[in-house]
Image (cartoon, helix red, strand yellow):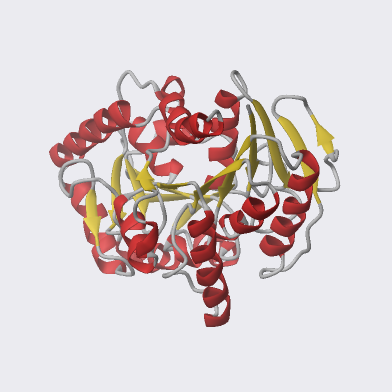
Length: 369
């Protein structure tokens, strides 16, 4: 079976890190993980962006096809996805049976066009978070909402990464409730095997990993810094990098920039912070839990219990964020208990092999009918 993956802004992960300020994130890492597993039984095609150092075509399985795109905050995503749609039509013949995985809100909006011109192709939409709380202009939000409504209606399957994300979309688009289901992200547990944490003699390491954008709660974290007792470490890049660097110069945090391998950093981390305003299930959080970190997260609908697998605080509340981090610092027994519970949760819930199979199993069966 031919499986086409659309919506990943770079492939492999890190391909565009030297060419733009805000590079890839969770969707790109998600794509890399599932493509590596699907290729054993299917022909995988990844349609992504082309950078000056990358060939247009690369590999056979996964087969990478890179396409053109325009720079600019509100041009990058639509231009890339429209070019990807044209590339898709060239890669899949009209009467060919295939599965297309549309990742992100803009890519998901393409499913009506795919259904019209490639009726035998099954579409799977994975929104990877919600648009409703993100700081976009009203016109942009309105266009994406309309596109998502039409995209979900035409989709054969809809994958959500947490219950709140599913509830938000099904409230906005109630006619599509029968299609939606939740699939957990995965973790490569062999990379996060820890025999025991060495006691920290200095300030406890507290880590944030992610894109430096408004919706990740980066400003909330920066506002909380003067009150946090531990050593805050930030890894990532994005539009708010200048603010993070300014805080680093003041000695409030250690800024690492974007890093490709998070394993060693997470193995040394005691507390992982996720002050996000809304998203699916971040891979960085899943990996932090697998590494045995104690998470401090915001109440964005993640399936973690406050006081058991994490401490949960309100969104956009830097005081509550600092208080929760300091509580874990001041109460070692609480911190260690949450670390154990988080790691146990990750071991039982996050498996890339299961994730990859769950996403396409229904669509692949339907294409054979």
